[in-house]
Image 1 (cartoon, rainbow, N blue to C red):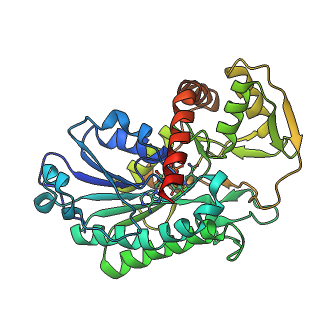
Image 2: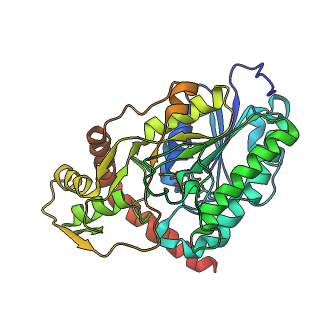
Image 3: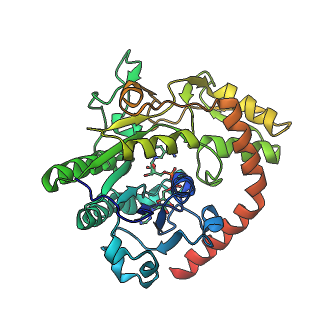
Length: 349
Ligand code: NAD
């Protein structure tokens, strides 16, 4: 049983808090809590949390969580009286996610799904805090023939040795770590299996479809679709997923829970919407399907509905309009920071 906070605000740790989802989670949590955000910037960006740095209820720590750490080693946390007040909740969202440099981050991905999970669970154990791990629909692998929905009871069909196994199988191992650790040390642990999510602050250079489409449309280049465009996928808006995280953390939940949109859209329709919202003259070009990608599955969200009262509420049109506006606005800044990060990295080698 997690300790109750006897203070006016909880101390909450967000690992991977400078990332796309993590920064939105920090935005929500900081309204009523004290937030300790930890990130090593492997795929996150300071721009995502810049607006929070002056907030007295927010502290950022740059640390690679695959290295062991003690919160009391950071003097800046004295302000939150961590030694006396402890930490009540830990959200672990840390994982490299940039598809453009996936190969360079294989080792980091393995560490994120093993040592980082261990180190952050140890912090939860130290403070008897509740713990939530951000898993992925990739743990299901390819849907079986004729399988329409992926439910939490489906054990999955994943290649444990393939080129993406550090992520897909890594997340499976991480889930096993979280649940086994929770049982062994009597901790309240949760696992949210996230399906394809989009929204403002998605990294423009992440190699993901929506930012790639927005940048191509903004530059007047062709939008490249791998396949014939009739393939469908689901798209959940970031605000909905964050709402799911908060509910999963605060409700009684056994086993993993899917967080995703059950509504499918054809890729070509998404591409056309982005061309429209960016007022672009770009065309759509079709190329051969990529062989190693998992066929997207659709989330069965009955458990989230029943146990958490959760379901996505933001319509694709509304979410895409907000996302394209944000991406167009941040494009110049992001390109500048990407190239300066790249310079920093190369000078560190
Ligand atoms: P993101 O890359 O923007 O965020 C992940 C953050 O973790 C980054 O800021 C990164 O720098 C940080 N990080 C990675 N390794 C770290 C380490 N060792 N120590 C400290 N920080 C570290 O990605 P996101 O889209 O916000 O995803 C968040 C989590 O949700 C990830 O675990 C991802 O696997 C999972 N997920 C996301 C989606 C999605 O559609 N966005 C779908 C499924 C699962």
